[in-house]
Image 1 (spheres, rainbow, N blue to C red):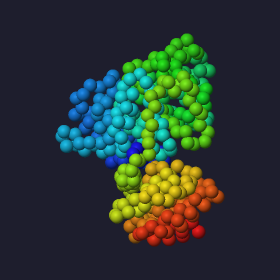
Image 2 (cartoon, helix red, strand yellow):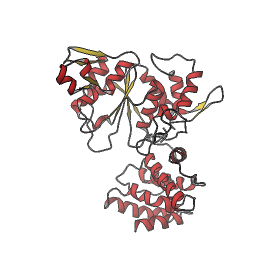
Image 3 (cartoon, helix red, strand yellow):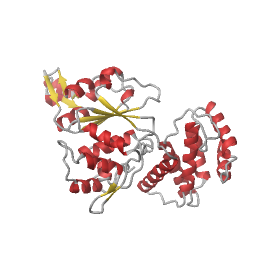
Image 4 (spheres, helix red, strand yellow):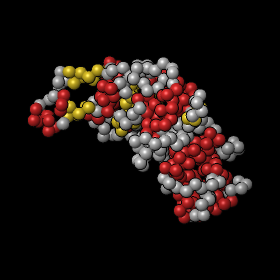
Length: 388
């Protein structure tokens, strides 16, 4: 499978870009629109910490086993249920957690919507108890975002000094022995990316202005996320790529797994937004997932009909977004039952990104597949109506 869903894209609520995640509780961020993972799931993290008697790497809040249990879910000896944050192969999570216990940084790679950000956040929350040491990668990310900046008032008044230095999230993580996160690493210009090489290889950040250096303490490591599907990406240099252990997060293997992810995540988001519970929505969720999977793979579920694929990724995260919007429509402007008419517009918006080419793909799919499918007449009519 893969993927819990990407929090950013729907994400990923009370706690990403995956999805299968249950509602945690309380914490300092209880009133926040989208609490950090360590706040939303504080109760689960505390329960794991209390019963975790396995060896923990330096400055880790939990053992590697407990971190994996936090992400994958399970039942503790005292009966406490840990909700799954990621639905996918267990080995992927185990390799990711083990990597962070070594001196190699972790690169989470995958197409958009495969829960890279979601998994990154929850790993940092479980290991360090703080997922906020974050650098958001963009084409305009400067070196200062990764290294350090300066308080110019202090700099002008007293000259270069430690008091005038403004540490980046990465520098703070080095000093405190915590996990730093870099989102969308390949969107950062190549020369800025390479500022990480010394940090990851030597565990040191030179400060030439002061003739000093900042050394990382035990417990420090870094999680980066990247995808190579979007435009405007910058390939990693071979020197930087060698500093990472790359873990690829795949799309869900089966329709049932994807339906579970979407259902769980939609329920969580609905509760966080105080949306009324919409009963009997599983049929529409399954139809949305079926449409996305067929168009994404270029073939119908039975393998009999080849299809053209649209330009978008049609990820699990986008399916969650479509169903969540349909949930709001059904709750506020419908009869409280999620219907085809509630999700049709969202599907159209997700599929038709290129008004010319994608609209042709969508119309052919409607007429050749949806129209002929038993039990899908209401869905066909709803989609035809919004596509007109």
